[in-house]
Amino acid sequence: MTISFKDNATLMSFELRRRAWIAARDEARRAYCAWASAEDPDRAEAHAVYRAAEEREEAAARVFGVS
Image (cartoon, rainbow, N blue to C red; front, side):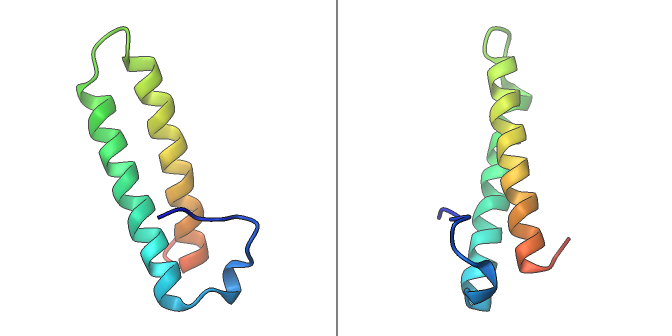
């Protein structure tokens, strides 16, 4: 699932906002696991991917109202 920032999140149904947050949360968890298990030449890139996923999860949490 992708969160579109051009759409007004307040117009999304509760269920769509909940699904977006859950998808973003799960993506951040997978990215964290990948970063934690990454080894040196890929570790820096894995960290960048994790941080981006974490930022998306934080945005989705704000829209859903859990942060």
